[in-house]
Every structure is written in C-alpha cells, then in structure tokens.
Amino acid sequence: MNFRRLVLYLLLNAVVSASATYAVLWYWDRTHPAGPAPVVLAEATAAGAAGGPAAPAPTFTLPPVGETAAAGPTPTLYVVRGGDTLGTIAQQFEVTVEAIMAANALTDPNVLSVGQTLIIPVETYVPPTATASDPGPLPTNAAEPPRATATRDPNQPLPQLVIREVAGAGTLDRELLVIVNEGGPVDLAGWSLRDETGHLYVFPSLVLFQDGAVSVHTGAGADSVTDLFWGQAQSVWTPGKSVLLSDEGGNLHTRFTVP
Image 1: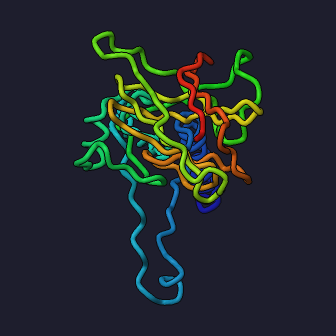
Image 2: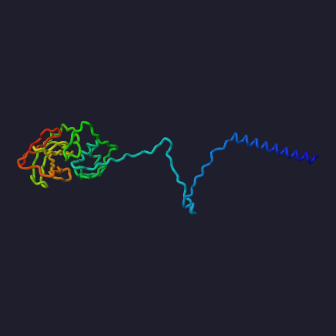
Image 3: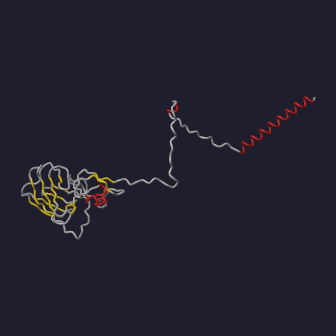
C-alpha cells in the first residue's frame, strides 16, 4: 500500500509540474511576441562559391538628412556660323565679349572660324520660339529668320554702306560684289541685295564696323566674317543691271549700276 501511494504521489507531482511549466510558457508567448527574423546578407561571390576568397560587401554612403548633391550648370556650346562675330554672339546670349573670350582662352576678338565651337558662359539658354507674327518664307539663302539688331548708340555715326565694285560679272565662280561701310557700325541682319528682275539675297547677322568690307559671292561656298555666299546656280550681275541695297526695314539704302 505504501508503494502504490508513492507511485501515485510521483505521478501527481509530475502532472502538476508539467501543467505549471506549460502555463508559464503560454503566458510568456502571449506577453512577448517574437520579433522579425534577422536578415542574413550573402557576401559570397561566384569566386567565393567556387572556393576562392569572398568579395567584400559593397558599401554606400548616404548624404546627411536634409542635404542633396549640388548639380553644376550644364555648359552652353555654340558653333560659329557664317557671318558670326563675337559681338553678335555675345548679344544673342546676353553676355559680354570679354566673358566669351575668357571662357575660350581667345586673344583676338576678330578671329573666328566657321564651325568653331565656343563655350558660352551662361547657365541656361532657351532659343526663341516661333510665333504667329513670324514672316513668311524667306529666300533660299536665309537659314533662319533675321535676328533683331541692337539699339544703335546715339553717339555713333549713322552707317553709310556703299557698293564699291562688282567683279567677275557674268562668270559664276568669279562673280562678287564688295560692300564697304563708311559710317558707324551696323548689324547687317535682315539687310538685302536685289536686282530689278526678282533675285534677292538676305544678309545673315554680321556686324560691319567703320571702314569694314564684306564680299558677297554669287556662287556657293562657306560663309566667313569677310566673305558671304549666295548659293546661286547662275551668275546674276550683268553690265547695266542695277544692284539695290536695302536695310532691314526694306528702305533703299544705295543703288549701284554694274559697269
């Protein structure tokens, strides 16, 4: 009888202990939820998987909160075209000639080459957009609408353009006329040459200073600051024909008769 009581006592004690342990564990799980599982980063590369040394994990440096990387200005580039001068380019981008010379290490403001790329020291430049008031079709030699000329300095004398000569009349590859400015500086943008039979040439932007000269060739070629090319397929000027030079407003400036 004593042995049976001892066995029952031990069994009862085991049941009570197991119940108490279960109750404690159940209470712990209810009051202490498990956190997210840790993330393990795989650092082994293909070389490490093949038995070689593992490559170190890449590191990234983030900027302090509230700071952003500063973006530098994008440089504005301009390719020199026929008739361009540093003065007209500076006027177009609203910068000074000296600033363009400094940005491009130029020493002579009068030396430019067609096709030369210049750095314009401005942060942004938005080209003008076409409007409903744009003029109609231009002659075939005009690559773009004439740019507005700068306000004339009242202290400068008025421009006085004269046609000095027409050379090689009747021969396309030699035919040209020479225009000389005997007055104050003028931008020839929008000025025109024409005859009385409908031939018309519109000048690009080109500043002609006092005593400056420019030759207008009838045939094709690459424009420069001293030579402009009309691009005609046949000669235009013949003896006895009149050459009419008009300003950007269409006002007749001078008339010349081909000898």
